[in-house]
Length: 347
Ligand SMILES: Nc1nc2c(ncn2[C@@H]2O[C@H](COP(=O)(O)OP(=O)(O)OP(=O)(O)O)[C@@H](O)[C@H]2O)c(=O)[nH]1
Image (cartoon, rainbow, N blue to C red; front, side, top):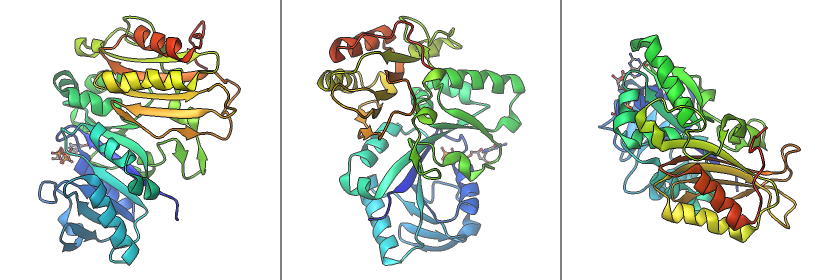
């Protein structure tokens, strides 16, 4: 079977510019299938529309749009079948636009745990639009907006043309504190370089390799310390509940102990666990394993052929809400039987 096609999840709060970005991408990124909730609800550029056939629409330039009927998996299956039969252009990637108040975790769950879908598609990354003008207020008032930022692999800062420079700078700082690993790209009126939303996951299709360091970016996180916001003062009271931190464990870990610790977090603290990523050294295993989770959703583990560098310690990064970093670090050390690194610093 062919290599799985990359899926980008495009999320972002109501009115933050998702459709404006999509309208640009359908012109610049041919052979893309766009999945959205309703054609009617979104302002997709009707000048591009060539043909509408039930839930499917063909766009000039070789893109195809599809409305999501019911849940995501059947929609992806129908789309795939239409592609196989030659009813629609052979798209090479999928972008899924979520509604502005959607929690991304259930969509990720759907994508990652349907075996049929997983054999044909892979999640490339989560891209979140953030409104430069209203983003601060949305983060203050709506926890969904915070989750959308925490889960992102890339943040698109929109409407900076309408926003005072000080507001943009303060928002940038806040976003970097909430999600240290996600690079922030400024996008005005949807004008985006298509490469900014591609190859964001562990797998880089361009270099055809797994790129752990680029994906994990552990050096951007502060070591876990009790009661701190990643070592930085909270930029807003609301964010004092959110913490981004790293945990480094020196000795190889007991696989089952680690599984227990992580399933405790994903089962009982799912609401508090916004995101974690890790490269781990397991006892009796020569190869490192990459782990990744969002709330209750654990991504399938990935075994690497080799360590990406000389540092063979297990390195975890977390973004949590109302969860003491010290508690998380202790849970990991107690269950996996490994001592914590003295300085906790990550190179
Ligand atoms: N000035 C300015 N306006 C923008 C920019 N990006 C988007 N807009 C405008 O903001 C409004 C909302 O943009 P949309 O792209 O519809 O936002 P959305 O996230 O798809 O909205 P929902 O689907 O309702 O959640 C539209 O009027 C856009 O023209 C920008 O960078 N600058």
